[in-house]
Every structure is written in C-alpha cells, then in structure tokens.
Length: 95
Image 1 (cartoon, helix red, strand yellow):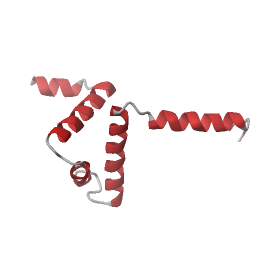
Image 2 (cartoon, rainbow, N blue to C red):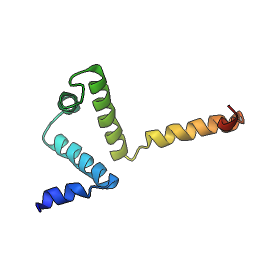
Image 3 (cartoon, rainbow, N blue to C red):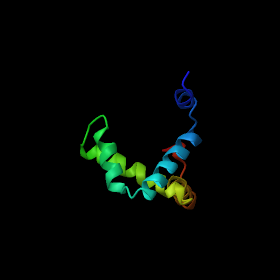
Image 4 (cartoon, helix red, strand yellow):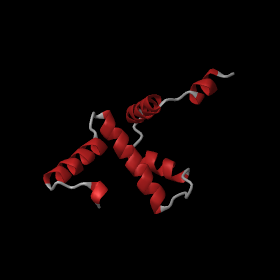
C-alpha cells in the first residue's frame, strides 16, 4: 500500500488540523492569499461558487488561522453563553 494513502486512512483530528496549519504556512511562504485559497475551496464545494460555498470556505480559513494563533473562538463563545446563563440562572432543561 502506498505510504501516503495509508497515512490518509488513519488521519486523526489533530493530524487534520496539523495538515491545514502546515498548508496555511506553505501558502504564506509562497505568497498565496486567503482569497485564492477560499476561491479554490469554493470551486470544489458541493454547491460550487455559491454564496454558501464562499461563506463556508472563508469560515474554515478564518477558524484555522485563529487556532494557529492559539485563539479558541468556539470555546470562547460557549464560555460566554454559559456565563450569561449562569448570571440569569438559565436551565435549558426547563425550557
């Protein structure tokens, strides 16, 4: 079995993030803009070149860049929601 094919069969979440992070680093070194990456991603979407495709591609790039910069936008949002709920004694099970 081809080594590259075998590696792709066992890709973990951490490995997938690492691949995307490394790809963004390569893009920076080769002066490939986020715009170019987003356009390429949108072209291979299930709904090519749709507004949804561009929005999802842009979101993925933004999120990966944030994680690369050790930012945690999803964690931060969940923590803010939980703090707000705690402040008003919100119990989602009672809603």
